[in-house]
Image (cartoon, rainbow, N blue to C red; front, side, top):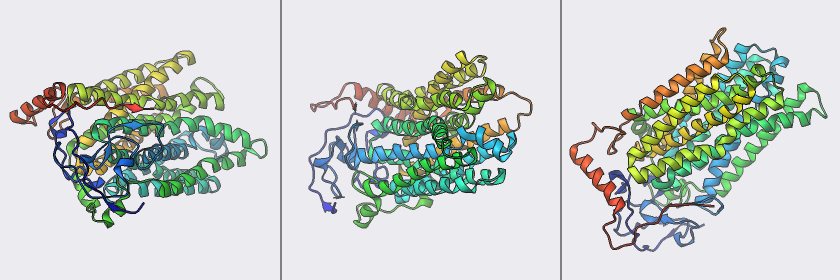
Length: 524
């Protein structure tokens, strides 16, 4: 693992990209991975690397800092796939711990004498703390890398969930502890940023969608596992202590994952950020300058709004759906939790669908394809949510919950298929803002439930569905530098539009004697 000077590798074949901005690689774009910017076909970069590229387990692009051009899900080798698996599994455990309280609230609330307003205040606080942390963590990703941040958040989360098991005694302590535990929700930002450093943009959408989706799966698994753990604890203790002891599971899982991640994974294909900075392979980046670049883009905030209409909805559903089925359809704790878990379990594949569709349409139609997928996924989500809110029987509610969930997760995947294009030099900051938008959305939806008065919860969901549909309708007004809009592109000059059209045609008919690159596949 000693840093060494690599020999100059052979030039890689040109990459037939789908948009003008992908035809070259800027120095700022590869800055965090230690890659040296070179045009396709030019001499490949040289520099320090912790690993021998010949020993990589995946195909890579040396012109983009040896980022992977494929995803091998069944590989666990360093640096690419080991880090990929740590990125999603750590986020999975963070989600598991973050929402460990939710499925047990029907037990905890009577013990603490909570009102509905106090329960919703706790729910809102559990997602509100994540907003601030995602704004902070985003720029820090650009400065120190994803691994250390992710490991630190996991250890923190494990400690907080264990403290909560003994500290929660009333409504105030519950609200405070759920606020503190909610900080682990910021693990989403390092998770997404990490994958943007491991994979080229052509497959980063799929990689981020898989990692985010499998991570979000923790929100569904906790709906099933925590009631089962609580039930098992009942065999040897009272209800008062059983739910407290059940928190040992998510607490220690988070702690162990954080420690192992720190030891057995890497920030980039070339090694850890600290190692590369020490070897002068990359320049250390300022979190302040990264924040200024990412936060200053208007489209960043538009994507944050749209993410609030998908991920924000998911957070709200994770907090309330078990109780929704318990009260509206009169189900017991385990049955309601099992049905509610179906929403989160769709993350096994649904978020990846959004990322895969985004990548696929990008290859076929250029960046317009990504925006088209974004529009379609959000519109589908809004319609399915409206229909779900109108269901009156458990038999019709369950299938519509599943259909609605698929739309939510796919929209999340398609959103982060767009994120890497906003400001490549400040991807961490952009990811932080967009990710925070998800939590801001959850806070807003929580306030609708908190102040609904006599309005039934299904009507609150209907109101949210209208906002989701509105967010889909603003997609044609998403304009990113050097990228075409969905319908029109007033931000581009005629010359830029002509170049983009020419680049897209070039991807269909390669004008070179070299063999065109094969389809990038996810190898299982």
